[in-house]
Amino acid sequence: MELSGNARKVLRARYLLKDEHGAPIETPEEMMRRVARHIAQAETGCGGDAGLWEGRFYKILTSLEFLPNSPALMNAGKAMGQLAACFVLPVEDSMASIFGTLKNAAGILQSGGGTGFSFSHLRPRTDLVRSTMGVASGPVSFMKIYNTATDVIKQGGARRGANMGILRVDHPDILDFIKAKRASGELANFNISVAVTDSFMEALEKGGKYSLVNPRTNGPVKKISAAAVFDEIVSCAWETGDPGLIFIDVINRYNPTPQLGRIESTNPCGEQPLLPNEACVLGSLNLSKYVADGAAGNSSGGVKPRIDYSALASGVQTAVRFLDDAIDVNSYPMAEIEAMHKGNRKIGLGVMGWADLLVVLGMRYDSQEAFALAVELMRFINEEAHKASASLAEERGAFPNFKGSIWDKPGAKPLRNATLTTIAPTGTISLIADCSSGIEPIFKIAFKRLVLESELFDVNRYFVSIAKSRGFYSGQLMQEVIRKGSLRGVRGVPPDVKKVFRTAHEIAPEDHIEMQAAFQRHTDNAVSKTINLPRNATRQDVAKAYLLAYHRGCKGITVFRYGTKRKGTLVKLTEITNLADLVD
Image 1: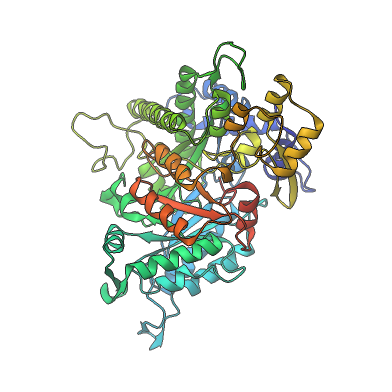
Image 2: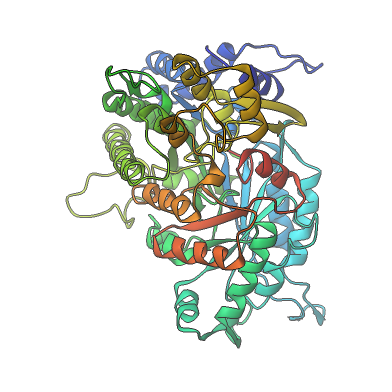
């Protein structure tokens, strides 16, 4: 395997099997063989050729053309055997449910998964508790208990816990929830998002009020100004980056199995909406590996680089089969989750290396050309994924909850999986693949990131290659680039190179949103994307971003203003890597 130094460090620290002294007892190649062999075991039960598919899985993994989510790499073939990254657990309005869910979440976090919760069913603060004739403490108080528990759980012996906390915008405690992370260090193990409804957005745009509803009685409590609540969301996000927004009615319009209930929450990074007690296995194709002809920065009149769609189609087919097999060999932490996951068989195939691909193709990230390519490319991947799922359904049968799903239409081919595509942040697996993360732009040309308390230094290899091939590389130039992090104001770099190496903070917020919307158009689930704002961005800039994301059809939005002062594990990683966390 061709692995970078940083990739080898991360693999040794997090992924390779170790002895009782913590020393690795397998090589990266042996790790990939372990994963391929374990996943291919599912083929035996489905009448397939396990040996054949082990070889194909091993090839796509070792070539770094595709990698599954971290729990699959960590746990495949081990006694724990939990392979999914994303979970949503129900939190009902009783002590038994609240603490039973916390117990279940502890096992999931320990196995390497991330958990999402909707606290919207909990009665509001000061509401009546009839059993004791006391008063309720409210959703935020229980979130703090979950946060403290997460603090003492280290995922899989290598990963910190990560949670998503969601509250509906019409919950009476919504203002307490919005401000929950304003205090330094509060809820450090949570990303939080407000579940925004269409009716709220309508009231906001009309300058009107909307009703707060007590979930215990399901009755209205009072009316409140939508603008006042929105302004509080915007102010807190401007200060801290939280809360984000989840457009919950938009998500449910695309809920593939509405007959089973409404979606209430997502995984920690927001890209995977799930029903209560549902899980999902994710994986990502490394787009930088699916290029034919030419090389990055080729301006000498040679053959222009292009996407190898034939190879990409083959990669999609193999990846879909890998992820579907993972469902059957997964060791589930709860019987309820196993039943729900095997009933819907949701998988989430996404991409990483998008920024790298644009560099190779000579496209500026924030250009109409790049937005159009994003739509075209994701349409192709989504269609090929659905074809692969239909083919698997012919072999193995449709997902059990197919009848009554949105795919159950006259003349339509049954699918093996209720959802096929998701755009995850790929924080750590992109490090292993040595590619840009998810669909994010280049964060900086040179920067450092913190992984397991170790500093990893990263210099963009495409820039170094182009600089050397075109003759403007020098030690002095690299020192300046490392100091600045971007090419802005750096002399000696040709304009066309500066164009394709625009960094995250050089891209306008509306262009970040346009890229998210472009990928969302042909993604079954949702898209993880950080909307970067400059330090001098105003609250009005945050408000404009939130409204634009809603009107462009995004399923959620997370903003982060450069220089925002906030504490916590997830945030330290965000400040360094431009991601909400390193879950997937």
